[in-house]
View 1 (cartoon, rainbow, N blue to C red):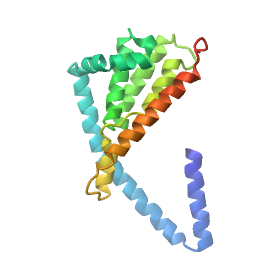
View 2 (view 1 turned 180 degrees about the vertical axis):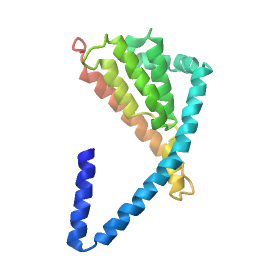
View 3 (view 1 turned 135 degrees about the vertical axis):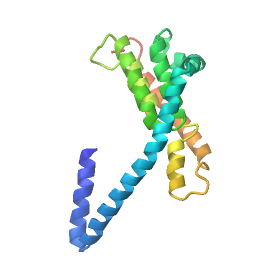
View 4 (view 1 turned 180 degrees about the horizontal axis):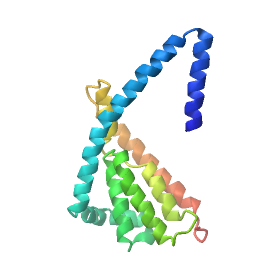
Amino acid sequence: MGIFFLAAAVLSIIFGLLSGNMSGVSSAVLEESGHAAELSLRLLGSLCFWSGLMEVAKKSGLVEKLCFLLKPLLSLVFPALRNEKAALGAISMNVAANMLGLGNAATPFGISAMKELHKISGFGKSATKEMVCFVVMNTASLQLLPTTVAFLRSEAGSKEPLDILPAVWFVSACSLLLGIFAAKITFPKGEEK
């Protein structure tokens, strides 16, 4: 990503010089960096709230209940983890946070889940089928309530920030199912690393 950002910055300067509009480039850099910092602070409040709520859910025992509810589905996706309570709990919390559209709040649970999966694999150097499938599930997550997107749309002046829900549900469900299918066929039986 660093290469793309560097290329965008260099091209902006080159085109600004060639078009004689270097003052426009300079003012855009200053104004937009201020907007980025402002947006980051606004998102931080939302992130703190949802991360705290997820921590309360974890300490109150809701994680175990959620794990119990998601276990039938997760057992289909991760048959080797049926008896791995810690891994399934971390995966369940990651899935729940992603369902609420809280990608950043899901990150600590994703890291915990990956650590548990690494322990189960015997600390091998290669990714297991479960690790690959989990990364795909985390990346192409089902979004029931896209709170971050709704917040950004609201900040941009949308009168109905959640009117995109049907499209988000459809697209996220399709991407999740196709991602899991692709991850499953990547490791045919007997070829798991």
